Length: 609
Image (cartoon, rainbow, N blue to C red; front, side):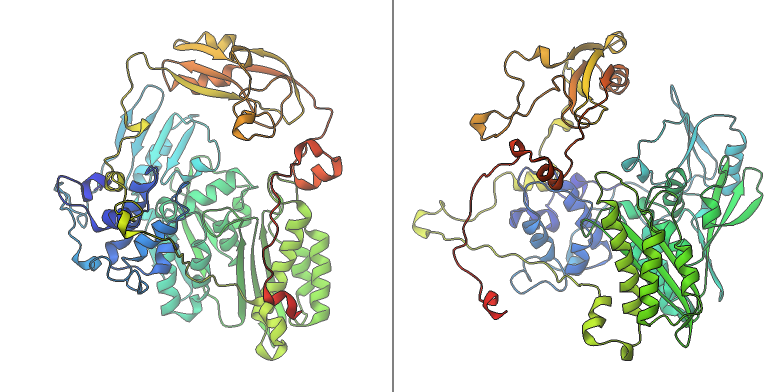
């Protein structure tokens, strides 16, 4: 059953408390993100009142470019069981919410499965839905050399441009791939389990059996992947297949499974099963094969472990560097070491030289650590991946994570309080915000804080946006043609003949079609430099717009833009990619002193040191 923003409340029935809260707390500005915010909170409330921490951890996938999030979070925190006094009581209990009854005969708790494969054919592709492993393997057996894709969450679409297949096979409801089995020695997961389901299972198993305590560490790490909506539909196998196709991808799932010695069960189209290691999987022939299951072994108390994911922001980001460490110890002597890193270079997985160096040595020893640092420094060959942080930074970060892992695992008596803090993770408290403004009651309604008139229309999905409007007669669509060349390249020629020959393509516009100045940010608006609408001979940055394809059909644009042929010369100057490059090149034309802000007072703490 699919529930929508219009279905949970509106002007013709009754606004849902979540919709009302967002409007009352001034959590909308343009309102474009409001329906998504409301539905995310609505889903979060399905299991009862959430906590404020849960709210803050659940909106990484909802982007707002207007409000700065503070009023949105305040609105939803007012519905939490641990809401602060100034927010508490603004709305009734979650349990008292009036939820619109679905009109579909298929209720939320009723199972509705299609047992037989369902196939839908389109002009250039077909879609097959399967619900059993046998029907999936049968579908694979019928494929020849067709380009095919197994589809579950399809979240990889947001990471890489994938080739368009002619055959889609929907595997999201294959029973054998979403089940699990637990024994005293191993946990076996259906490879198509969602990340959210995996987190919930890992936490339960870790609590029940100390031999699987490491699953809690894995669950906490998986919680750092993407955001709640992505984790709800993204699957273990899907994440692994991105890593299989793109070795440079810093897959947290691959890193965790390799860190904790997991094995994969792979089945071919004939039903023959093979068990393989994570490392061998990277070069395994996966044509007409499926990852059926993942096996994670138990660990006794002799194993000490730690994992990290360092991101540019706290949510919804890939790792700058991720790492996993497992040390098998006896009297603090390393019997076996596992050191796994992601985002070092496409082929790097294990710090094998450092693993060998540590074996047989006392882990919590300064001489051992210094030797490990030197070993890691030698074998970590970080590559340059723009616009990611540079190789040297990522190398030092990786070494620092090893140090942090050892500090966090060291016995209390081995460390001073000063050094012990190096192993601790910083815990961010619940965010808060305060508004301070003056009002004059004699001027009311002027200066009175009231929700804007369109707020409820925005929070209930009634507000209309461009994407909501049906195409008009004779409407045209446009798409930029982008420069696929580095900065300082020269454009030698542009040939749009093939694109213009396509049925439905109307025009190809370039700088020559601009009647005035080729600049979308004129000086009267405060611009210090010319911001060109279209590239003019010299490419200023990669993917700078070169032209615009205009067509009667939106779908034809993607093909048309790819048919525009642009010839470039090799740049003679290196691009300036960061502040250090600007300073080195003395590029004063790109440095501006906009405004000088002098301090009005100096904090007292400055005088204490």
